[in-house]
Length: 290
Length: 254
Image 1: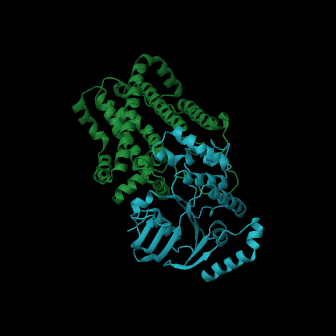
Image 2: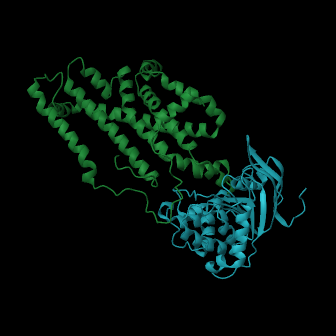
Image 3: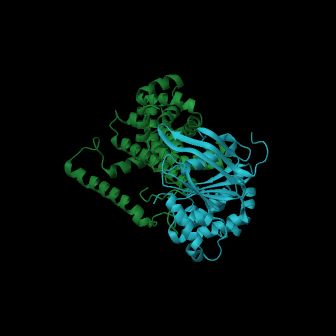
């Protein structure tokens, strides 16, 4: 594999080190290595407080600075806009959320599938990996209009763009996770009558799950960008379209309202992935920060 | 060739292995009777682990002949040997019981069936009530027990133990050595045991092979017998034991 590929892979990774196999350990019975759970207040309090503080500051300073609403609306004006524009925003929100979710699911399916294929068939890995890296050097922004020409104004080009942006970190993290399994563990499995498939199924894939989820969490934050790009390149619905239509009319509050909703969608997706990880990878070390 | 059933489970003739310029093993000649236990001691880097891997069929000898039962190629030998590595390498996503049962699953049994067949051994070897514990909840000593049972459940004639207790403190180590002797007496197999601890080798095996500094060769073979009786303290302070230990130390050049 080329150095460039390696670097890109490493850069995209860095979720958690593979400490799945333990460390031999001394005889003190180690309780599961989770740090003590934080109470909800200590866990969610700080981020909520800092957000409220920032919003409050924004609200207080704007009138003093005499910034007109069409340049930068105050949080109260954005909130009012969200309420007044709800009939416009609601269908747009649903459409964009759907594009993001569906595109993300496609990306996970393709990403994990490709990672497994590339891992199991070395020839394919050598053949395809450079192309995979290459595909990421093409700016998605310039692809978007071409996809619109190809697939029209419907949901298809949005899904393709979301999936294109999201699948890469999943593939790279997936391959890394699958390859990082301890060679000694694989040797041991071979002496325990494990076929190639058994090693993959019982050792490599579960060991790679934390990495795959790292990739998915990265991808979850990209997904909304993809959907908005898709909508900007050609559409007549969705939050991206609402923003585009609001711009010439200087409906800044509406644009901000759309941004808030986009952020909420991304956060919800991120949270869903984290929740899924906790269900699928109960043995992983817990991370309080997330 | 070795078509006829030999009295020896394992036979090495002029076996050797080099990794590039580094010669790990050279001119190894050795026969291991069926269901006997042979310990290997030697300086670290002396090719002990390489020797186990060759016997296991994870590596092929560069020279000579390596036979395990009727298998002479690495691929065939793999079917006769089960390896227990130094680190327990338990899978954190499996319970203790499912870890021990993995070889049964590898041979095609369902998980329920594998559990059913593994559970009796679990209880017999002092792991009852730990079936559903995750490896992270077990002490180091318990993890090594599970790791050994996993090796046993492969139902191979030859067990290869690579520094099985190397990562444990000395008290746990002593407990596990006793436990292992009982387990091996209960379920007899041909056992090769690599260790850097001469006492451990003498306690656990009937013969002790002393390997040299790299390139590893056999310097001395000591017949430890299993005439040792009594408590561990009586054994390790008995004149025979002390004399064997001295011979081993002398062979190691210290």
